[in-house]
Image 1 (cartoon, rainbow, N blue to C red):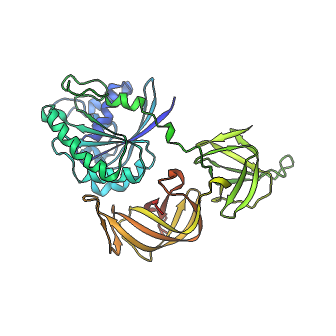
Image 2 (image 1 turned 180 degrees about the horizontal axis):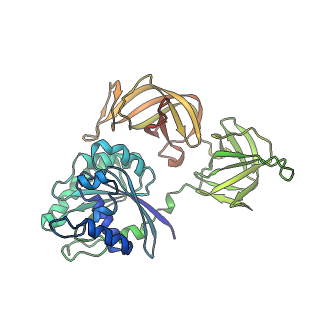
Image 3 (image 1 turned 90 degrees about the vertical axis):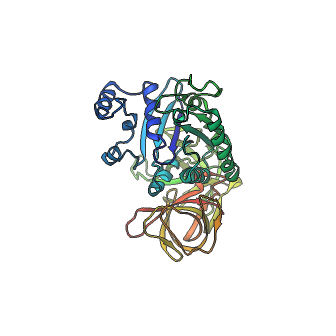
Length: 414
């Protein structure tokens, strides 16, 4: 049974946590003791209804304020598929948390309050989903019960969002009118919106195909660890452990090691402690080569006929995630797969206005939660692909040299 990772995003009070709670509740994915616990915590609600948002708003501050602050992960399954739901914050100051969650998502559910329509955070989250290359977007127009389940209002918002879709080049966007509070079109079809002929949200999540999103053509194997037991039985053993980020590798394949450019041949492939003839992404394996090559953590094994770009000058679209501003000349550590190198910011090409989607040139600094394009100069060459060509090898993060915390999420664009 495959796994679908999806993120819910939207503005404050659009009902993201309630929607996940409704999915869990109506699909009977809540244990009996969990149900008793949320019923007790819902006693103070004037309406007497169960507060489904409690299932995902785990922080005390979240429950007190009625908002999502941290990224919440929930695991559930139906007879058709397993799911990992990622509930992202709606406040602007927690946009960086949304980026963190969305980086691992196969699908994004963007919620829109039917009363308010498209707002700034709708555009912001759509931009982030576009930049991160999320192939499947579901626009869930929530709180339809508060607009009398109006088809006209639903269509107005659909038309409004299609302008964003066109500007960002989003493909495969699906629109669903829902009421997370009442459960309309979440798990069961709504009797209040007979004019809607499409699938329910859960039905769509169960059937949408995402396995084709994995690139099995271009071999990218970042070396994570070099295994050298140096025992009597395994005196000459040298294995390179890691996770195939893309592609297929077979015994006997001719490969290159980057950044050194040394060529060799696959001698053996080990998966789960046993030798196999081939392996494919995203399996974790050990590779052994016919030659004794100087390879260390951070090097990458690729095929000669599909080589990535080897460069020190890297253009990235960046979501800035630190309270301290980014400036030209600032120095950071760039983490790309298993490789870390020092880098410096050479240029801020532009900042992206998430409201108008215009490129604003001439900026000298970038502030928290802003999206921009910058040019980085790495201290040593990196083996990279364009994010649009190969998502698994086209992303990186910036790390502060002193505090060693992540300050920026990078999408390689040139």
